[in-house]
Amino acid sequence: MYKLSKAPLISAQQIDTRLESLAQELKAFDFDVILSALTGSYMFSADISRRIANPKLQIAFIKASSYGDSTESNGKVKISGLGDIDIKDKRILVIDDILDTGNTMKSLVESLAELGPASIKTCVLLNKESRRVVDCHADFVGFEIENKFVVGYGLDYANDYRTLPEIWTLEEV
Ligand code: IMP
Ligand code: MG
Image (cartoon, rainbow, N blue to C red):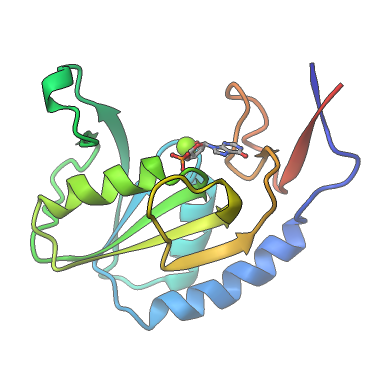
């Protein structure tokens, strides 16, 4: 059994303040398309994109799934959700909720690179640097956190807790 920590690890006010400064950093790059990795980054992507508020900035919510055929599984993932957005020659910002082992972000970036974008930068709300197992670093990080399992503000445990406006630690009881 798990329960939420007594107090949030990161309050809604702290998120708000950090997003404001992060948006200023991101504005300098003039991205064409945000690709938000579902589902965990939905709230972060919505809040950061409206602070960038560039009329020409497009957004798509993507999902990565492994190829079923093991002969194809050299870390590459199949990306769905791009719809009619063509990322060729575009400046891409990939957004995810959290960088943990780094496997998700690394395979996402490798697969997106094959679609010929002009550039790919990465942004995560949270970074657990101590958990990294593959060589992967985000260009933009909201908060550095310790090796604890966190939920809220989009992040889930078995699909629960996502809609909480702050970030909490999940503790075993
Ligand atoms: P990675 O591939 O190990 O970097 O894992 C990234 C994914 O694992 C994230 O997109 C999350 O969905 C999930 N994840 C990793 N750590 C946490 C956590 O503390 N809380 C909720 N989800 C997490
Ligand atoms: Mg996720």
